[in-house]
Length: 187
Image (cartoon, rainbow, N blue to C red; front, side, top):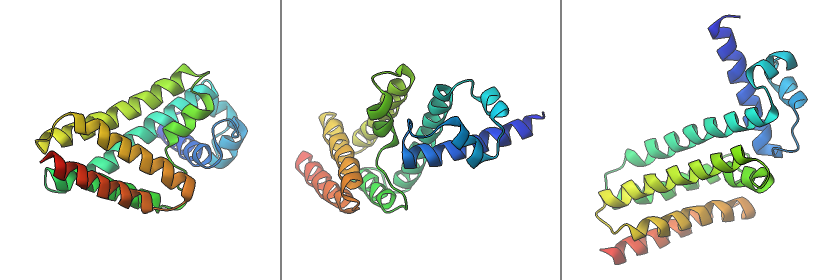
């Protein structure tokens, strides 16, 4: 099998895994469902991902990279400082409006398997640490104190969870307003 064919099969498998895992949950989706949705044979699927755990971890790594890239591209297109920080909440609001939004894939995965799967727990922690580091960079660019990073992180995470539970994009707006007040009081 050529490298291109293998990459195509892997991409199809990961596309199917992402759609199904995010929509239905990790435990509810078996490898047969991934096979059916991706068109990749079960034998090939297990060659690419020796276990369902390996597929779940690959799905989470891929989703992390894409989610952070989309957020950073959106926010980094704004002027540095307060506008860039507030753009994080604007991007969250756009995400909350996407069809099929079900909250944070990493918290969902951690809730399902974090206690029994070190790989899932590590992927969730890596994602959250990277998000915190990005917010920390934005806070530093804005010249605000480092303590603001954790406050903004809690606002963002709370907005994500609340939007998933309510089905409304409004938590992004509320979190943005609270972030603006925090930034204004920080000078």
